[in-house]
Length: 477
Ligand code: NAD
Image (cartoon, rainbow, N blue to C red):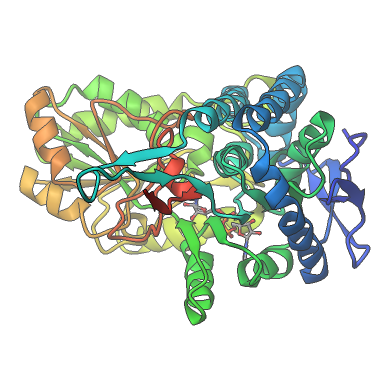
């Protein structure tokens, strides 16, 4: 899998080139450790070049008609579609996800390009109420300019494309820095798609590299009109602090400690089945994973039994065998974080391992923790691993109070009474709440983002992305 043109190279100004340092990093298959490719270790010198190229290309790109830009996006989508099987396999090997996750991600990524292509041709702005009789007021959508996009490793294709596709569609040019654990599916394949369709030089650039060097160079660069970051709260805070110094525009999509509420009238089989999807999809390594299960006492025993029974039937292994429900965690760092910072300290504080709690290499057994109290890391921290911590409460009010107060993107509420479910959902401070459902895979059509009071500076509103990727100066006549 090393034959792709991007292997070990950056894509800047329409050309493949080595990084200024000349150094490369190795990309490993997560399940086996086998080498699957390499990525150039870019730094501030490469970012400078990419920003200059993107800046030079932006006016020409914005001046193209919307249908012309849309045609490029559709061409990129077609290119990715032609490589569908190859990309699914790449995603499985590079991220360690099972086939269903990989298929969903590739499909969503392609769909995002098509959605953005349509949006570009449909949204031009608004007619405003006249400020005075006989006057006409218009608000016109214009591109922001040059965007820096920094993305994580968990859904590397999808999370890049939800910024890249609308960004390009609305006339912006882009420098993308994918995560170093997934630089191929997160960046190189998009550079290949751009190259394949002959996107004008400089419109889309990919600078691979480490977070501390290439990532920080992007985050600090004065040449962007917006830096869009998806990743950890820790790095997001550092970027926000740096940007605050001279009010550079940024958008942050950070992590969440999402909750899964099971009320005393819930359908327990349904809740337990959804629990697996909510907490164990991609080994729990999603910003929308449920990492706190808050269950009312009347149904707690039955819920725990139903969850444990299902979890014990799951198979952990190499996704490429086709016989695994869960693959490996992304790295030893991530595994150690889950085990040493979440599971072990919670157990030391009194949590009980009901199943799992052990690992073999990067393969972490799906784990259910009982007797979890709100002071334990399993409750207070985003887990980002295959762990279902269960906390028992006595009342609905207690469940709501315990849920709120943490950064959350997506919660679930289970109740046989839909009105009750909606009433509880309305009181939860999450960007999105599902009633009697869990939604581990986020389609390109859905709004995605957190409850803004907590830690998101921007919410990516697909399909209503126009305000996110454009400015809208008003014209009055
Ligand atoms: P991370 O913050 O370590 O890395 C994300 C990206 O930032 C990577 O490209 C990395 O190279 C880069 N980076 C790292 N240090 C940097 C620095 N100092 N300056 C600039 N860039 C830097 O996060 P991760 O471990 O890749 O991803 C997991 C986190 O992402 C979790 O907290 C998860 O909740 C969050 N996440 C959020 C969403 C969302 O939509 N809100 C989606 C997926 C993941």
